[in-house]
Image (cartoon, rainbow, N blue to C red):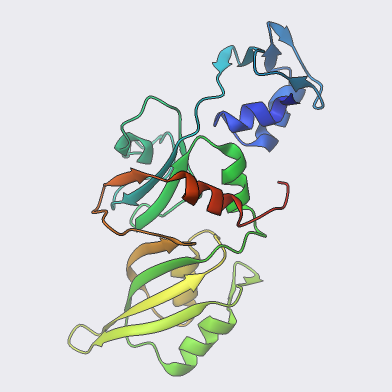
Amino acid sequence: MERLQKRIANSGYCSRRKAEELIKKGKVKVNGSVVTELGFKVENKDQVMVDDILIEDNTKVYILLNKPRGVVCTTDDDKNRKIITSLIDTDIRIFPVGRLDYDTTGLILLTNDGELANILTHPSSDIEKTYVAKISGKLLPNELMTLKNGVVIDGKKTKRAKLKIKSYDKKTDTSIVIITITEGRNHQVKKMFEKVGHKVLKLKREKYAFLTLDGLSSKEYRTLTIKEVKKLYSLSKKEK
């Protein structure tokens, strides 16, 4: 048996916190009866409905996608922009783990495993995410050290980061910089470079923890192996 909110979250319908809110509001039924108790437990055979929509504990799906530009990392969009789930050929309801900006490309995970998503996106996870950034101007040694040690954005200092200058093009006055961070704050990489006077012109995430884009062109994706999923779970033992 498992807690009702966990069953809902694991189905990919919403986060566990959101599931708890729905339960308290009387939006959830188990075997046809409304349940408002957060400690309520269900069995596999029990029928769970949220807002009269049947929740199924689907076979778990784990996908690694090379996201192209011009795609939003949401499951719906009121501006009618292309959504990330439309790139995946599946009938199973999946959602992105974290987000990449509309104009940012690269590695992103999609799943219907709410528990794993919570582990990976929790602030304490400290999962390394590596980006290749094309920025305006030449990144000076003192600016490099400032970014490595952390800068204040949105009122909070960023954690230590790893940076390496890959190249500088004098003709276009642009630099290619490899940056690795362990946070997932909104527009973080762009804001970090802006803090030291450089605009991010292009941004691509090339690595997430131990996962890479090897063999995947833009828009292509693959299913994670069981070994990779277990390794992702092992990144954090903390109960979310």
